[in-house]
Amino acid sequence: MNPTARIQDIYRPAAERVKDFAEVERRLGAAEMAAQAGRCLACGVPFCLGRGCPLGNVAPEMAANVQAGRWRAAWEVLSATSPFPEFTSRVCPALCENACVNNLATDAPVMIRQLEKIIIETAFAQGFVAPVPPAARSGKTVAVIGSGPAGLVVADALNRRGHHVTVFEQNAKPGGLLRYGIPDFKLAKAVIDRRVNIMRDSGIEFRCNTVIGSDVSAAYLQKTFTAVVVAIGTPAARDLPIPGRELRGIHLALEYLQGVNRANSGELPAAPITAAGRDVLVIGGGDTGSDCVGTALRQGARSVTQIDIIPEPPAARGYATPWPDWPYQLTTSSSQKEGGARLWHRLTKQFTGKNGTVSAAEIGEVRWELSPVGRPVKFAEVTGSVRPVKTDLVLIAMGFTGVPANSPVAAGLGLTVTPQGQLAAAADRGIFTAGDTRTGQSLVVRAMTDALQVANEVQRYLA
Ligand SMILES: Cc1cc2nc3c(=O)[nH]c(=O)nc-3n(C[C@H](O)[C@H](O)[C@H](O)COP(=O)(O)OP(=O)(O)OC[C@H]3O[C@@H](n4cnc5c(N)ncnc54)[C@H](O)[C@@H]3O)c2cc1C
Image (cartoon, rainbow, N blue to C red; front, top):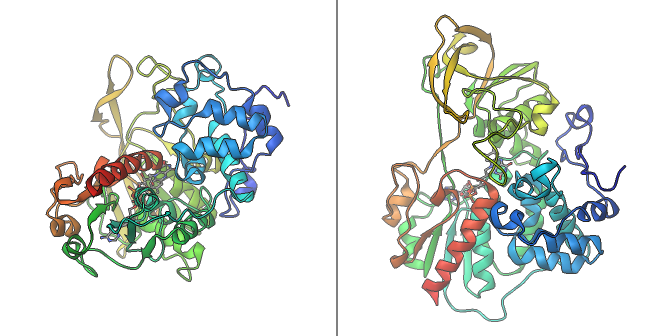
């Protein structure tokens, strides 16, 4: 292999990986990664961290240390900006790599996400990552509602500053969508357990199986703790209220993915919804839809079809999104490379069924009006294009609408839910919001970045 070339395929062979739920990426070795680190140009203005990574991970210094085999120094640089690199190095779309100067002319950026992964995995293997109980306690208490990436980051940051932090989580285990949404083949759950154990040993208390708003009232938390941070994600999924939606065999994507994740970890004896032997229709072309595709293929679906209402994006970066902006461009996930059909500009009109169970979806085509730079702006249905597509399992993966207006957490804390489903803080009363709850549905890296900023705000309140 040319050591100066980017390694193109980092996945286990599709035919092999589709038979199990183990992580799809193969682990790259130290020598391979040292060669890759050598591709970093050490730019005077590193766009990877200035315009790419929301956390501001200092990729040039990470690369220099990996190339020289200075693992502790590499980990110190990485952990100065990133609280949990083991999560982002597995699931991040790598905004940094898009903004890498190597990506400007060659379309072959430095493998920054893989550098992050080998640094943090080496740090764990060599024992650098250890509990960090604070030297002294402040006597102040913080309740964090929700243990997704945002809740975990806030808890970690405030515990380090000496406050007593208790994390309340409605599910059986911490992790939020990292554990119950994202499939094991992208992020093994042992990776979350490893971090949560370190957090427990650092003095953070986790109270799982506790729904705030019913098991414990939010108002009680406000009375009992010095500050409260709400990091409940975006609990409401966008549904598809068309005729036939009530038929059996039609589910929200997260309902399906949660069940499979719970079954894989032994929390449930079997997945409540299985794609085995079924014709699966996934409605929605994003990350969640793609996770449904990979999961359905692993369960042994007879066929998998994924549809999206938007037109197929261009194969290459267009005028609208010049480097280093995030490109409007076709991406194909590892799951989509494993199998299944992908259809664009499709609109689902209704579901039909037999004996109360879905048997087909009536799907039509739409034609898009494009903006001068090629972005879809408005669609019209193509007359006479509606055709039945055979399906006996429909998974609706159309995103999330945010925090519902009637959220008991919001009501209990006297917080306003915005029309966009975001929860505004009441910092003057010691109530803060973080992650997707505050910003709307986003990415793990953005939820973590937001949570670090919120932890600073809480610190100012507690100081
Ligand atoms: C299927 C799927 C795949 C995704 N894949 C990716 C990906 O590959 N890369 C990426 O960057 N992003 C991905 N995302 C987005 C990413 O997971 C989220 O942006 C991120 O998890 C948000 O973090 P959060 O902490 O704000 O919320 P969440 O992760 O949603 O955590 C919220 C937590 O609050 C808990 N909670 C809610 N209400 C209560 C209550 N009343 N009482 C107690 N606890 C409560 C929930 O149980 C949950 O644990 C994906 C999302 C989904 C749904």
